[in-house]
Amino acid sequence: MIPALIVSAVLGAGYGALGARLNRVTTADERGLWVGAGLVGGPLALLEYCGVIWLKNLVPGLALPVVPSALVAVTTFGALGAALTPALDESGSPGRWAASAGIKWLRSPIATTAGLLAALATRIRGRPVDFRRGMLFIDVGPGGGALALGAVAWCQNRCFGGQRCTTDALARHEAVHSRTVAAVGELGFYLTYLTAGVLWARIQGGPWNSLTPQGCGQPFEKTAHTYTSDPATTRRCRRGRVSGASGTATPAGPNRR
Image (cartoon, rainbow, N blue to C red):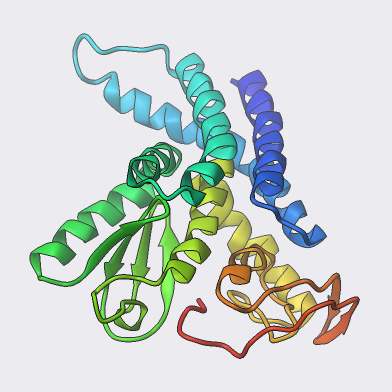
């Protein structure tokens, strides 16, 4: 088991680096968190898949070797998530978006499955559900925020326009987060976001889940925010003081998290 955990950690870090490159991450702090999330997320994904395969083995006639099968899953799904989802999401093809969503589901079985159940309930209640950029967007009530959990974005109703559809800018923003999950795994991403990401945001003097107008704050938001008219191109932030900034950002709006 220990060798498999080491292999999955190395692979996870590699997938994080590849995902950061293909998603055009430009700031060093965000690149570092992609790699760190993969380093942590690889072993966590291995344990997660071990649990899934163990449950599957309870069905007679469907038994698989747990650890080897889980390592194959981490290797295969992680490579697909890091390498393919950026191009699939950026295409204009609903079929390719569906393929991307399938890969993200494999990399986030807990969050995406919960989101799909919520989407079904949302649809039954007659609330808007939209699909684009490899993600499902569901209306969860009043407000203007959005939260990506796996391949499903839980959105408040101001995120939906007059035709009950999300804007493409918001879809691209949330798709970046879903692609991070696809590269490093759901447990690695959310754990890193809520620990190292929050700590680094406090060091920069920015919010834990968004950015200041100068682009300081949660590193995992920096590439995502370039799609919602608030680019982050700062290189160093310390307690609200910015050095090396080459762009400005718009004030907070409904697309912010």
